[in-house]
Length: 232
Image 1 (cartoon, rainbow, N blue to C red):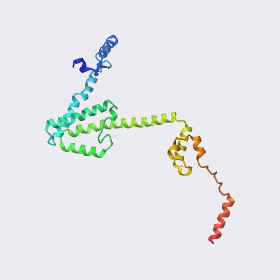
Image 2: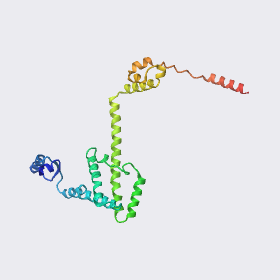
Image 3: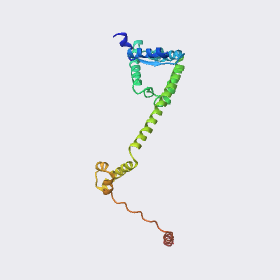
Image 4: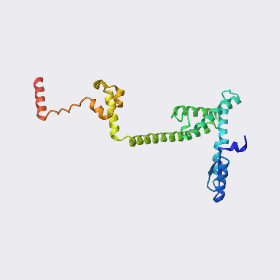
């Protein structure tokens, strides 16, 4: 594998203007890389943030190995175990996005487990609790983003369904379900009723009896007098 093959698919950050910027973007495309452009003077922020995906990610694994060594794991075993887990997590983040990737007690809102784990880190001493206490805050932000996206998705789905299905059709669907439940009276199989158009359902549905008028005031007065007479 050549060096060009190794960097294929990587992102290349460009800080330039004018014709030079266009030439660098074209060069990145020729190398099969994804060009990113940053404003002038922001290279320090770009490089500082990149630590979280590089050296700081290794520090996270090192903390994992350090804690697992307290379980009498061999160092090689303690390192070998989290690497597939980390690779799977990153692969999950690649497809659905960061908000849908997290798992564990924070993502499911299990505060009790998080409190117990933080208490354990405090008992271990050192800066284990300080580091562990910061991570759930970021995890909570991801969980909130996932919940917000889920609510937006449900709202959009309801809106699309309402636009695609006019009110008359939705009313007909309710009629189908009602007649399907009442198939004993109509003698129609529920599955067949669910597939029938509203016009046919109305033809086979049992007739609705007109509402009986309630008693008049004089009739209610007479009924009350009769009940009093019987009681006496």
